[in-house]
Image 1 (cartoon, rainbow, N blue to C red):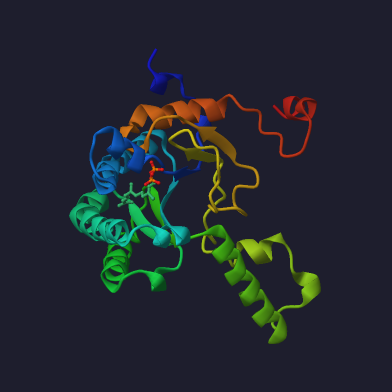
Image 2: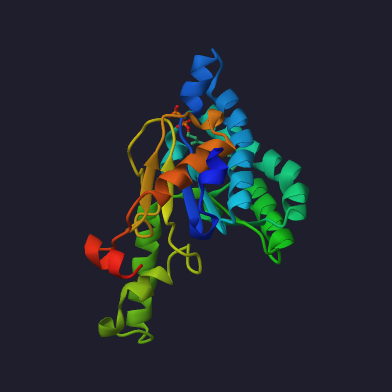
Length: 249
Ligand code: FPP
């Protein structure tokens, strides 16, 4: 039986988030520079998206550039920004045809203008689609996002729009850049690293984690199916005990 046939389609995650890692090591293995790895990583983005479409996943969030990634060599940063602009430019029509909605999370104002423009164009073109939401995390870090939320809440309190007693989980969720997006049920990280690296810290409170040794440029549809199969083998207790979960079945 193929991996896809083993997946229970009625129990797939609504939202999958991926920390795409290992492009540099993959390139090094090929005797090439790091950008070669990032270029190949784009093909894996296609694979992950197609697999999400196969499974009826509604949101696919990809950690494409963190606020910490600015510390990489300038040549790599410039190469990644160019790759983003050219990839969005080349792919937007096909993504639109396949009903994909393109959106972003992160500090867009800190990206080069060409990048901001391409992303805004892609997002506006695809905003009325009804298929998979491809959420690109760019110039994103969870700590940055939480600091911004704190500032917004403090402003609302000082302006008298919000009282301290009324601050609750929803106040925070609705001020995050992911507002309106359900929390990911499944977080995947490639390349054998077992870290969260400042990604969606609030939103992954109850996510299942799937770590794979596969380097991102080698990631194929089957690797996403495997992650979903692994997810389906977990018992999600949300703080309760096993017997309570069984009784609710
Ligand atoms: C991590 O691998 C990868 C990145 C920081 C960049 C990921 C970007 C892409 C795959 C291009 C995405 C394009 C679009 C359109 C979304 P690494 O460089 O940290 O690898 P290493 O740990 O082996 O050095």
